[in-house]
Image 1 (spheres, helix red, strand yellow):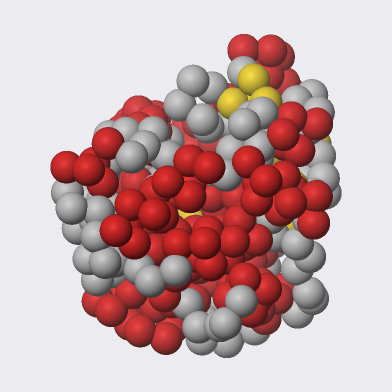
Image 2: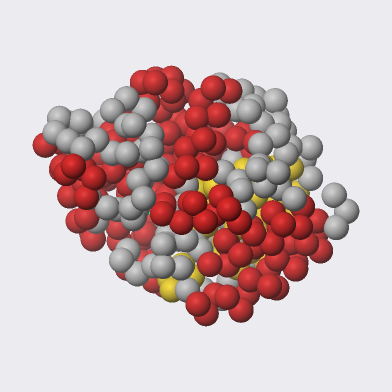
Length: 306
Ligand code: GLN
């Protein structure tokens, strides 16, 4: 694609002024230190073309984007049905850390991409301590990238010291018998959320999702096609919390956002796109990221809906 570089530059330029409309997440104190003026975008196509613009080499913690990879890791052990057992896989229509439906639905998280669901996923991963459990997620990423993926110790400690709301979700699920050790599940989840990449490497790491589960660069089978389809379907229904409907209308692609400001977006069969911009809108999604994706989807006619 000849003009992809120009398009990404243009996407960045148009999105840059919008960062003033958002706010950096601060409920995890360490995340409040992020500089909202840094925005970036990276594209990795299944043919191997890589293009980036802005601060695509600025590292950030994966936060909720890690939920895709913990789910993929669990699906490798248990298959799609076992991994998703007890989760109806419906959009929640609530904030990512909402507890409301757990009360109404006997502790069952609506889907694995909200916090409660992701904590349940982490509780099912093999390993006896948080390091080992989150290590399963890090290893999946590392196997694609062929390089270790670090955990940001400060962000991990910061979330661990303040994660009362997630602990409430986990304790709720333990009360209803969905998991056995709320504290262990939370610590593993906090640690996996602190895995750190930049947009360039995130697009590379997520490329197997665009390749029907096979990494198009190495040919390595990462996840079976049925599991991959399930993850993409979940992303399109639940990937941006209760902004996911608007995102489907304006961008029309499966994506997963994070409070650190990252978004991983997949164009099945074609490319992975990673964006970064720490200023978040009212629904907890990066304002610059959403704007860049909307621009690119329009420019390249990427929407899955025609
Ligand atoms: N670690 C964060 C939390 O649980 C992830 C949330 C997110 O990125 N939306 O609150």
